[in-house]
Amino acid sequence: NMEMRKKAPTQQQQNSGTAKTHVSHIHKYSMMKSFLSFLVAALALASVQGFTGYNPVLGAPRPAAQGPRKGNMEMRARVCDLLGKKPNRQARVVTFSHKRIKKVQEVNLQWKRFFSEDLNRNVRLRLSTKGIKTVNKLGGIDAAAKKFEVDLSKF
Image (tube, rainbow, N blue to C red; front, top):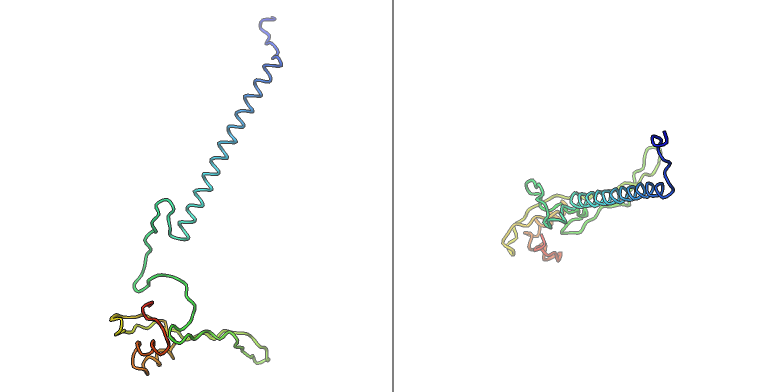
């Protein structure tokens, strides 16, 4: 009967069992930590590529789907390229009840293409309608650019 009965584990055997479980917990923790750091790095890489179009791994920007006449999609201020007219942000609307509400009076900007004889190519500008009239009055985009000191080579 004594032989059939299991012996009670000694103090050393008990400590060795907990040491094994402690080591396995540390190993699981380190694996989980390394997996989470890999996941965060992959997420950061994907967000950089998604927002900027630049792939840090390959180094080359991805080709952007561009429609006709789109060019680069940089944000520009709504300002006339020739005259420098800007939106009037001081305007107010006075209602029937005499409430004063602020509003912005935007410039009537149009994309217009002119042929520059100095550059011997077409120049595409964002002009106000008054700027278009000024170009027509002065006899061409080159004369208007000279008068208002605008460098057409940038456009």
